[in-house]
Length: 183
Image 1 (spheres, rainbow, N blue to C red):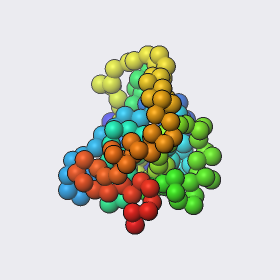
Image 2 (cartoon, one colour):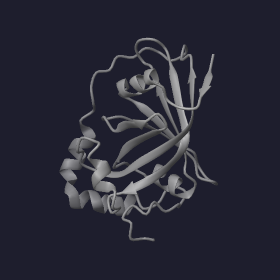
Image 3 (cartoon, rainbow, N blue to C red):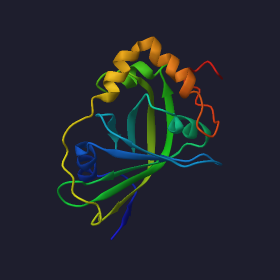
């Protein structure tokens, strides 16, 4: 049932671009795995072996820490409507911080979102598709407003303070270097 591919084809790209939800998995060399759901129109396909996603403020910053440590990343997409399918991209990622020179040009790929803290560029080494027969059918009802409201209430300075308290290292103590001045 499952097939391994070297790159994304047109049909896979169309599938990815239609998804409202995707899952990101990273792991440090030693420590906890991280598996996070993502949404809010934050993913872009840049080519048959490259994708990017805009990382928004959250309670931790595992992906940034793990990518800085070893670069390994898997992104999974599931069909929750229509024909069943599970698609996983395996590869290596790198972190673009707001302080990095390429932030502005890369951020233009996305609709501006308050609380954007990183952009992750993923070089895909392989793609796996599988049947997805066990994935239930769900109906998309819309985006949750809570994150936008929380970010708006905090304001830019409040968000940066939150980053200092919650996003400078992973839960295993791996630095994220979110501000870029920790090098």
